[in-house]
Amino acid sequence: MVCDRCGREFPSQYYFNFDLVPGSQVCTECVDKMTPEDKEAFRQARSRLRKPPGLSPNAFVFPPQCCSCCGHAETKFLAVNSYSTVAAVKTLSIEVPICRSCKSHEKFQGYAFVGGIILGALIGLAAGRLPGLIGGGFLGMTAGALVGQAVKRLTEPVTIGRDGRIFFRNPKYEALFKAANSLS
Image (tube, rainbow, N blue to C red; front, side):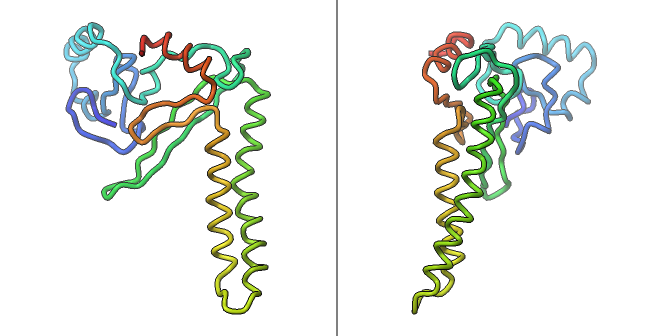
């Protein structure tokens, strides 16, 4: 994530103050150094600009419907994407509206990852008893984790790409999101 004022890149949203101007992301160091006049000038300059792309919590407007079924949203779903670069581990996260019924399905999908590890370990241990196959339990757990992660990712209502793009499984909600944010 990049500060809109100084241009420095930070590994997560926790280095930013999003309250200065809704839709902008300014690092806490810049906010601490700004005088009240600087803050007002920054607000006025940013209010004339279109919302920047990115994952700051205030950058996007989410329609009030559930992101999975488009029903009445009663809670939030936290979509997270963490990946490693040479310099750091980067985490992108965003909360989107979801109904309680769909959220309970998402909790079940989270268990798919753990279930995949356990099933893979059992298969790997059984295969490890075959002559010539050493470390079958570890290989099975790894394969199970990959399958469990794939199932989880394919069934999540929202995913975030490394570049910060947001993908919705429900095309109707995606159209509502694009309309609310004037995206094409």
